[in-house]
Amino acid sequence: MEQFLVDEKLDIKSLNLEQLTEELKSRGEKAFRAKQCYEWMHKKLVRDVDEMSNLSKDFRQMFRDNYEFTSLKPVRVQESKIDGTRKFLFQLRDGNLVESVWMKYKHGNSVCISSQVGCRMGCRFCASTLDGLERNLMPSEMLDQIYAISVYTGERVSNVVVMGSGEPMDNYDNLLQFIHLLTDENGLNISARNVTVSTCGIVPKMRMLAKEHLQITLALSLHATTDEKRKKLMPIANKYSIAELMDACGFYMEQTGRRITFEYSLVGGQNDTDEDARELIALAKPLGCHVNLIPVNPINERDYVQSDEKHIQRFKNVLEKNRINVTIRREMGRDIDGACGQLRRSHMKQEECKEC
Ligand code: SAH
Image (tube, rainbow, N blue to C red):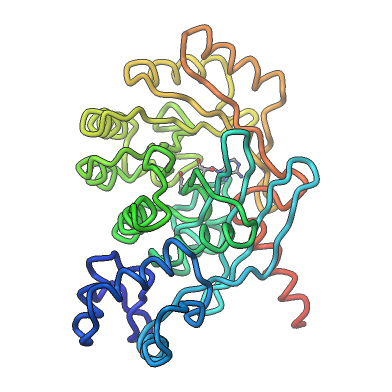
């Protein structure tokens, strides 16, 4: 369980029930204690050890002394007046900040979580990557974004998307543990089908994930249809070609029986022509992929522009005429700090200003 040590303490919320049982047994505790603790943490979502009311004072003290109990604190919450979307900025134990988004839909509430502090993938249009990678998030830190939001809003979360800051496949082991805990019947018991993981396309990890045979949805950030164009937007394209990516997608579908979604951010003048649409059809059709178009959300540090509405509709129509299943991701919470990583950045900048 070494992977779950933080500052020499075991990060207790990152353990699955089996590991927790083993850990508490090694301290002479009975197995049912582990079940009780697990439920307090992962089902009843307590924010503090003292809320575990059926456990003795001594036990709680032992728990506090020996373990790291992740409980994220919201330092800022922004609510959209347009659609009720809320963005949360959470502080981690070491002072790092991550952001998460809560979206209300007719079919249930969805939370978009971050998987890393910062990111090292360097996608040209993305704010999360501007300062590089700070560190990976522990499974508990991914989970607790959802737990804290459930408690804060008082509403059940039914869908989880790993589409916030960070590259989930660059934090693979913790991601896998997170998915197991999230979908565990002793915890929140979220259906794997309601979990989406988005990747910029780290081919070996996509293949590893395929072999796990999970029923989650995998979304691939494609954003361009030729290696040449993709390299201009995403440095990862220098490492893996589109041909390798498509092979990995085929393998994933074969292993899991699940369809893949292509995410395609429309950048004005870069990837939004009829030719791009036709090339995208050629990639999506053989695999039967769903395409999710995202009008690019311009960030201050870069000069990318959104495709105009006419181009977006035209692009969509070309795909639809060719019977590609396509949706446009309308940005939620347009009146609050836009794209991934922007809330964290704007908060950090304000804090810097306070200091000077
Ligand atoms: N690292 C993962 C998750 C990142 S964010 C990945 O690459 O998939 C989720 C999606 O938002 C990705 O498709 C990402 O490319 C896209 N994205 C990031 N910044 C954006 C922006 N400013 N405008 C539009 N889409 C953006």
